[in-house]
Length: 126
Image 1 (cartoon, rainbow, N blue to C red):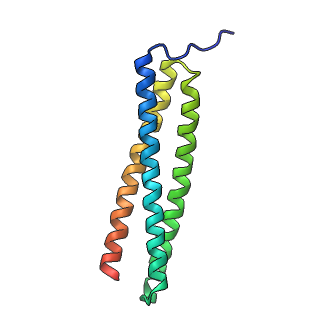
Image 2 (image 1 turned 135 degrees about the horizontal axis):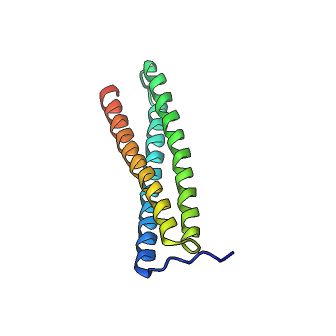
Image 3 (image 1 turned 90 degrees about the horizontal axis):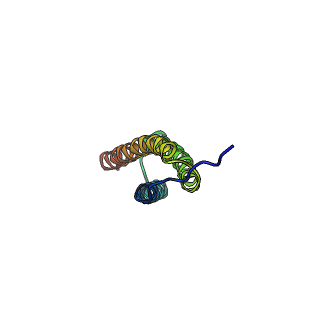
C-alpha cells in the first residue's frame, strides 16, 4: 500500500495551518471568557445576593462547565487536525477542515449568545 501524498500545494498547507491556528486563538478567548464569567458568579455568591437567583446562577454555572467540555473536545479535534496536516492529502484535509469549520462557527455563536444572556441576566437581577 502506498503512503498518502502529503498536501501537494504549499500555499494550501499554509492556509489550512493558518486557519487551524486562528481557531486555537478563538478557543482560547472563549475559554478566558468562560473563566471570567465563572469568576463573576463566584464574586456574586460572596456578596449579599438575592437567594431566589441561586437556581439561575447554578444554571449558568452548569452551562459554563458544559461549554468548557465542548471547547476541550474542539481543541482536541484541532490538535488531531494539526497532526493530520503532515500526513494527509489535500482532499482529505479539506473535508476535515470543513467539518471543524462548522463546529467552530457553532461554538463561536454559542459563546457570544451565552455571554449576552449572562450579562443581561446580571444587569437585570443584581
